[in-house]
Image: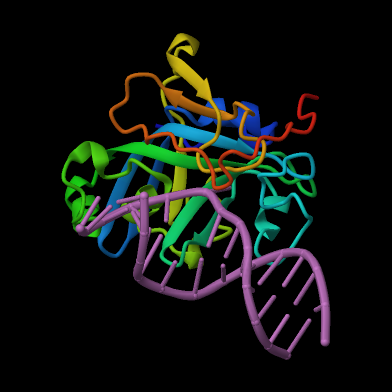
Length: 212
DNA sequence: AGCATGATACGCT
DNA sequence: GCGTATCATGCTT
């Protein structure tokens, strides 16, 4: 398998999301190597996407989303979880793809050691924080270049996923723009996470015009 | 259906 | 500076 290139990922997050389905995230650590095939992603944009961490401009937390494509944006949420994103677009224009779920394809033992709570192989990376868990991703991985063979975390191109087997729906856990269908997953994968709507249920407001 | 658990960002003083 | 509402979640009941 070959490394993905920066140019492939320097596109609109919605397009980058579809490209990332079927790709493989590979992480090395002193403990060993784990590979996860990506089966579920969500696109996040910038100033025009109220659900994006970049909606209100650049901060120390989200600065890697403003940097070059193909880098890893790792953030900490809910006091105990990390989530991983692949930066898309190019310098200065923020955008990223949240990697929501995947199938462990190699390093199964290490993955299970990192997530003893998982009762089945399908559950090892079924969710964004579970996925960072099996890959051993932490705060210090924020900003690593996934297209650099020397990086501890890399992105490998996979076999193209037939468009017919790609499903589309609203993003999980977001309260605003809850009807914007920027979640993509591979139909039939047992590792796709469950949908749940974001916090402010009952409050329905029109999504801003997100179509370009 | 509820809780754990902490960083972030915004609105005030 | 400081208080607090909110959170791109996971696990247990």
